[in-house]
Length: 223
Image (cartoon, rainbow, N blue to C red; front, top):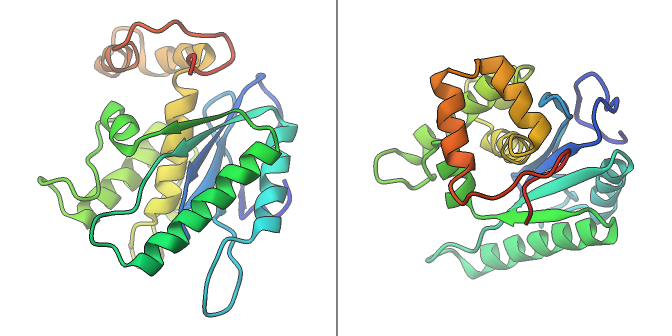
């Protein structure tokens, strides 16, 4: 895939489904999980240079075109500007979010927008401003969870050389995992990985089936 910052064994099609997780924002990332739930490719959000950073629309389109080529579906975190945030920061974030949404639409990639409270709640993760955790603790938890649930994610992928969390990467990986784990193939693979009677498998079934929605073979739950 062109411009891939990290490539994990290529994107050989093992099943009909790949899931793309997108953590929007200038410090976000784009992650692709293959049909086996392994990380295939990971990009930091492509940016333009200069004093006023912004998303590189050309590079972003190239990424999503390569995702479309393998029949991927996208999970995009649906977030809004935070109260008290500087207007300039809010505008820049909104502009970037719009660029991502338009690039996905132009590449005709089926996309689900999911709120942080939904996917993080399903995975048992706190928000960045959860009352019980500091923002740094929440970021570290996301990084550790990405290493736990996706077999080929290493510490170097989600932590910097000095141990700082790269939560944009971790959350992109977890968004892709959240989508993949709700496919029929994903559920079968996780049942084998954990064991059908394990606590992890039982907890997952409870969280995934809260609304009693039916599962579509090779794809995410109906949106």
